[in-house]
Image (tube, rainbow, N blue to C red):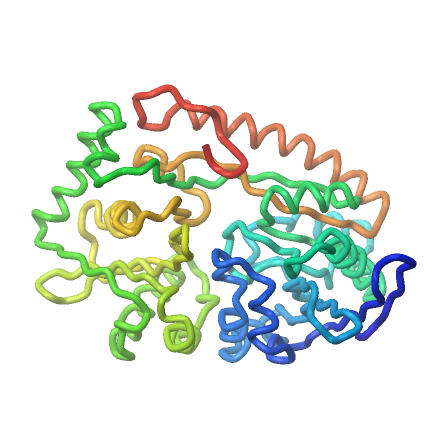
Amino acid sequence: MTASRSDPVSPTYRSRVLSSIDEIAAGQWNALLDEDAVFLRHEFLAALEHQSCVGAQSGWTPCHLVLSDLRGEVRAALPLYRKLHSWGEFVFDFAWAQAYARSGLQYYPKLVAAVPFTPATGPRLLVAAGPQQDFWRRELIHTAVAMTRAEHASSLHVLFADKTQADELTTDGFLPRRDCQFHWYNRGYASFDAFLERFTAEKRKKVRRERRRISEAGIHFRTLQGGDIDRRLWQTLYGFHADTFLRHGHTPYLSLGFFLELAERLPDTIVVQLAEHRSVPVAAAICFRSSSALYGRYWGASRDFHSLHFETCYHQGIDYCIRERLARFEPGTQGEHKVSRGFEPTLTWSAHWIAHPQFARAIDKYLQREGEAIESYAAEVDEHVPYRRPRVGAADHGP
């Protein structure tokens, strides 16, 4: 799809829909990103395509939207997928699809602006720096809605957008949706012990007991980056990861080839906490990092040691953030058990454009009720964080 538009004041531009991220040069795409947008990098999205994690067979068909100016310079883009199901999104709309079906309507296909299988907050409306950012962002939104209509899709969903962009989308007729994750925030801690000093005595004792059990079991940890890991070790790590999915009755979304390609192309973004017992790997957490944050994504283990999950997925990550002076740690979705270990309720946002007016009104009312419940839940959980000092309640971007 290629289109053009002329504005009386602003320049004419062209829009393109890419069936593969490789249809745009990596440098052009990455120039739209800030240094924290690790999951939106061309290399990350390309690895998903190259290794068939997304594509026709997966139900995630790339249809990235790109706007260029008269000179052919890329000015804005939207990471976009045509979806035939709702799996791998972490913002659940199965009930909406069922309501459509009961009414004799088709919910699929729908369009989703997101990073597949990655519930991490970040920009979704990618716009080049410059004096006309507001124009390009606005036109990107309008073009995406027009594309949704032209394709007769039921809806357009922008998932895990940062709060500023979620607000802008709401102004343009999208329906805002809130959810709650648990994030850790670095308040300038000099060490893990300094971090624990903020805990109540009871909670501090519990964490130290968990860490002591790991040490007494003879388990040692190594922190590795993508470039430190050879193919044989990646096979072991992937086995841990796949086993976690299979234990829950699911097939892994990502392939071994995806991790191998990403380790070659973006080695510095991958951080692995590797647990070893008598020099044999027994567990690992596969994380990604940006310049300011650590993102916990996948974990698995071959043996069951007491507190191994907490140490591998949470305590080691916090330790890493303190050493590297990263501002926050997002360990993934759900899990109230994270709260007693220092993670705090944090609101996340998505925005939804629904083509059918009657369903749009019904979903809007539902999201208002749901949002109030989410905020109440976050405030209630916030009362149980382990810190001694008075704190501000759950925030959109952290305290």
